[in-house]
Length: 352
Image (cartoon, rainbow, N blue to C red; front, side, top):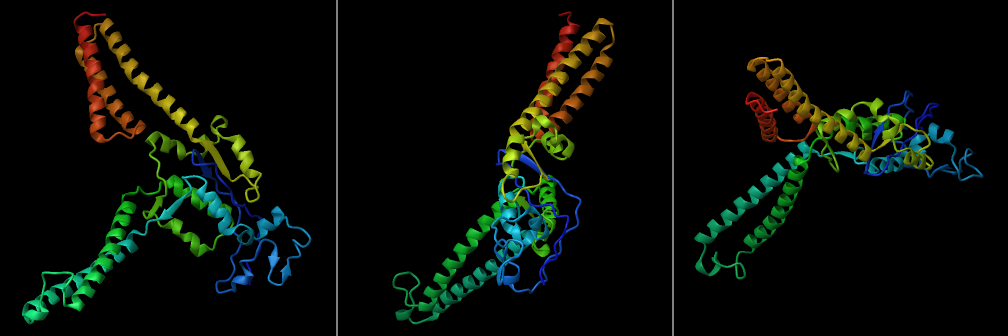
């Protein structure tokens, strides 16, 4: 029997191109039921508005399907077509599995097959040592009289090629960063918003945490990732791409706004401005504090406490605001501390 329609469907949504970022929000609506497994495909995979025996009464005499019909049968009118359109339109939505465990098992299987062929080759070499001279020649490939050894070499070359190619591909997949919580949540929200447009078992891949990777990973600073976690920040008017929103929502499959679209360029500028402001504050505030304590004849100990506090704060903020590695953080902190110490020394010598 076909899936039962739902009166509270949230249709699938699209996102802007890869230069933008987007967030799929989760609607408050019950999922539509899915057709029973084993049902003939002709009863499920119908063309839009077409029944097995002829045109559907809901679409008879008209090629346009109403939004209400799409809400009632999302698996018929949207399904994978809408999902692929939505997922491929933004890098933060394109998340797939790397199949780490299955890949490791295949590699081990192929490795064992190569070991078996390698052992067969050694056995044939040993046989050649004991065979009569006229049929024993291990010094030539072209004139090798041992046809079985030729066959083993051919099989071994084919298996090695497959193994090495798969090994390199798998190593590249393993080196890819895991999908972020933000990216995974986007896809989960889409499945909820689509109201069971995709078979439940086929959508469970998104729950394989630790095995999910973005197809095009983007390096984001911790501050940018912090920004992504809060939907309320994404709704700030100046960061949204309203023209693109309107253009996308006018298309056939994206009538309801359950995805928030933002321009990455604007978010990057916001993060850059925040980083510059914090950097200037970390440079100017301690200088004025040191000058203040110097003018009030405060001891050196208090000044050292100020420098220590700002050095620790600088190291923490530098780690949060950038993607620098630990030794780069240490080098930048040392340079920052040198600036503060030079300023304190100038004051000690009576300069300024």
